[in-house]
Length: 253
Ligand code: UDP
Image (cartoon, rainbow, N blue to C red; front, side, top):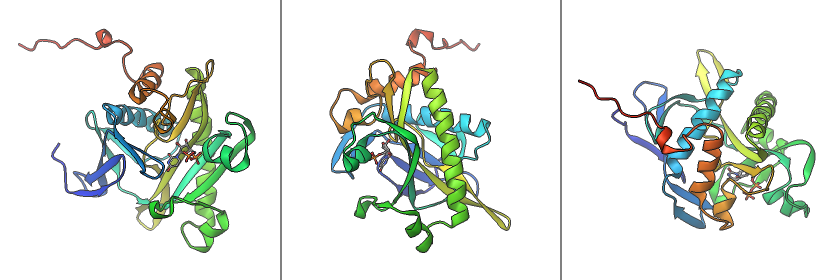
């Protein structure tokens, strides 16, 4: 499909105009960044894996009734999505302490939390995406109270779904980040899940060994990031574990 004009380039993805009004093409790059882009690398194959994995999670979430921006995967690196006005919040759901929470509270990483905890960061790279209380969100009009209630309800459902899917393949979902967008349908607006869900935005630990299978492998120099993401994809059956299992090309006469 011929791509439209580039309309936005972020750290890991590029957005192009889509073929129809209200659609965009989301392209997954191989670029990896951490610590607010202070650490950068190009990781062969990451974009292909994240495109596939995000398709897998978004499709599953759609099937349990969560509205998402995902329409269809176009090719190895691109997917067709609904255009949405992004709510300027990173919605973080945590089941176990890790990363910034473990640091802030002096908790050991991996400590189970008494219940899932949701927190919000204001999306602004120049400020380092600061953690913000709900009161800021309402007062500054980034989202209404009704929006926040919907976001929390959806985030908890996403958490239950992802935790269950991951548990089924021997992986513990430590935490993750999601984003929401607004779409307008006639006089109504509603929130849909946007951006991506992939090991770039989740913490995933092997249940048995505690091995990290997410972007911390890159952030903390723990090994090969593509191998970790491939392991997640293989376990979920998203990619064949063995290339010989790929369907053979058939000769067309
Ligand atoms: N996260 C993300 N993008 C961000 C910040 C965090 O996808 O800009 C994800 C991160 O991968 C982890 C969760 O959100 O799964 C919680 O991250 P945390 O606040 O612990 O931040 P970090 O330690 O990554 O700085």
